[in-house]
Image 1 (tube, rainbow, N blue to C red):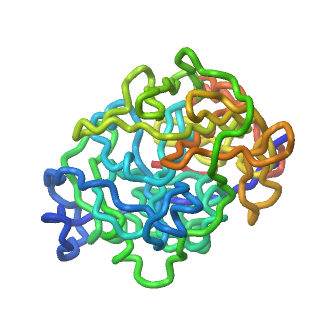
Image 2 (cartoon, rainbow, N blue to C red; image 1 turned 180 degrees about the vertical axis):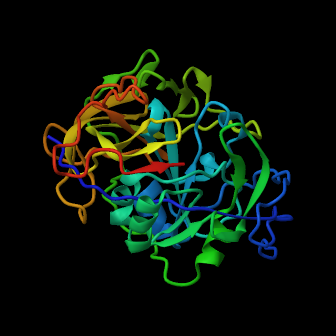
Length: 365
């Protein structure tokens, strides 16, 4: 049974595109004009202490920078920088679509985006990381209040223009980009260095089921993720709704580990402009788990008893399931795929209990 914790987070920013990764002056505060984003830089190195806890690889240590990234179909061909993240979380948002939360260690000049807003679940996910730098774009008043009250350094596109730039727009949103080093420079001092968040790396556990065919994970009636093992590289190729996860520069995103963490999803307090309720993914509690590494699947249980606890991935013997060194994608997949909702007032999987803040209170962007 998953215990719910309601926390919220989001915000945003803009400026001009960096020239060769160099910093530039802040924007004027008005809506920025279009600028073509520079080609994505080589993946930023992930930190030493960082490497030991977030990737299992050595490297320079440094603060943690977190960036929310759009994943609607129109944004997917424009995505940048996901391959350089130490970790990427994927969570369901309004209307059954999903969004990414990419976690970086240290100041790198990798271009990341399109940047979008945070959701109620994000602060709960990030609590074990300490005072991170959080870059995002857009938030309703309720969510923004939670962000400002949290122990983090928020850099919202809406209020701080310097570290962001805009490269055109789509029907859904402006194409906003940034880099970890620009967010860190804007946030100033006080960001926490990478710490132990519960991940364990090492040789694979004994057993595990061989994965001989593509595996599809359903988030909702609109979103699936399919993973296929690539034996020569010992990585997993991902498809978002059958579209290969290939970035704007042609880079294929291929993590060493994919964690499918089954979670309860409740109807949140907010709705978006189209009338879709904002889901709250419950990351405090326990639930089923599958870890995909080295061409095999290891089933077990995830456990996080409190907000200030780390999340552990445990096998049937109660021991930690080790991850392979490298990037990890964590799919916060609903226990049951989410069905349609929206103006017709259909509910999500598990309605918020009476008296705990359910219902429509505000609108999200």
